[in-house]
Length: 126
Image: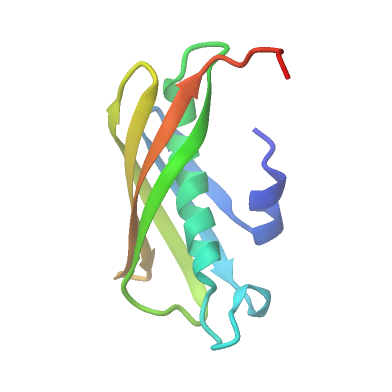
């Protein structure tokens, strides 16, 4: 699936199976905040993208998902290198799914996230 925003940040989905996914992003100078650490929004976007990648293969034909909310916990700054996100679906109901992600820089856990996603069939009403 084409994902222009993830491509803009350089996020790559490495593995995608129903209920799990693995994604990564290389931390470049353009992704740093004024304190020379990876902007929290980059790590949030990595988790969000990885969560969607884990959930989409579990959806029925014609269904979509959208982020309802994500709770991020940041544990350590990342100044360079690659951040990898591992995601698992915790629970998938008919209309809401819950997912958990862990983000690593090397072997160090730098953040985790828990997210809820709406599952729905789009309508053509505006």
